[in-house]
Amino acid sequence: MLSRRNFLTAAVGVAAAGGLAACAKEDDGASSSSSGDGGKAITLGFSQVGSESGWRSANTDSVKAAAKEAGYTLKFSDAQQKQENQISAIRSYITQGVDVIAFSPVVVTGWDAVLKEAKAKKIPVVLTDRSVETSDESLYVTLVGSDFTDEGRRAAKILEKVIAKAGLKGAVKIAQLEGTTGAAPAIERAKGFKEVMDASHKDDWKVVVSQTGDFTRAGGKQVMAAFLTSNPDINVLFAHNDDMAIGAIQSIEAAGKKPGKDILIVSIDGVKDGFVAMSEGKINAIVECNPLLGPQLMDVVKKVKDGETVERWIKTEEGDFMQDQAAAALPSRKY
Ligand code: AHR
Picture (tube, rainbow, N blue to C red):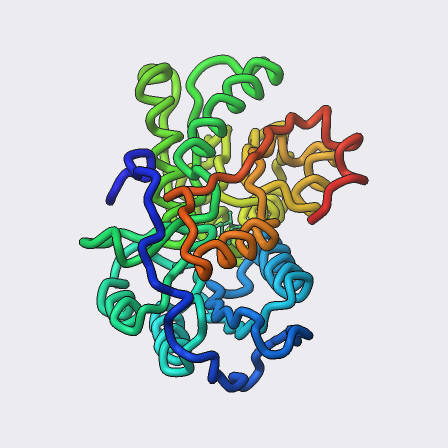
């Protein structure tokens, strides 16, 4: 996979403004906002991953609200975590001649063909949230989203603090609940976490079991139950998102153990429900991944449409939270 850190600042280089006429019709079930500017509003085709997590719902709300605020016509589709649905949606946006296509790719590979079709029609593509692996970097303009590798590193670093605070001595036996197989956040969070483990904890930490829970509560619950059966001595859980951690908590409690005490838990996202679990002492620390990408995305879409230069990767700012910060932070959480 291409290292996102190696991306250069790139000129947009897409003659989007001179592209196809804005002749699109609404998709069935599409959400749209009226331009109110005599039909000159940008038409944005957006293909969302699905509705698998609290993070995703917050991201969808942010995109829809920001499109409305910007006066764009938004054509929105939910791929239900299936790549073939995203490819169909993108093809449909190409046929409709939208001004810009944005999507959050469910997995990293398999996009070249459809992205080439968009390029052939001079429709610029903006990635949001997740990256893709492609043979030709000119197939998309920019990525608006988080540094998932760094989130994995931050999760390992905050786990050091959690372990010290809990006074956990001896072998650290980690269960990892991975995100969707092949998705950028699953690959990169695991990579970042491992980097820190390999550099600083070769002897004392071990990932004893690791499996996908598909970023869902149900997945986290089911996979954690299996982990506890096969490895009853797990003392740490690293969950790639809050929803899987929340599902896992149910299985930990059902097994007669105390989440946050018998099994220390670090997760990623920082959704409200994650903060609630943290304020109840059930999650020990959360690494934030900000889903409120809508305003940044709309800003970039406008620049791309106008042929302006944009950064190759527009990163999101995020924080880390220990359990003792949860109660104070909870009321002001925006998602
Ligand atoms: O791509 C971002 C990830 O996808 C979030 O961490 C997760 O909750 C979501 O489903």
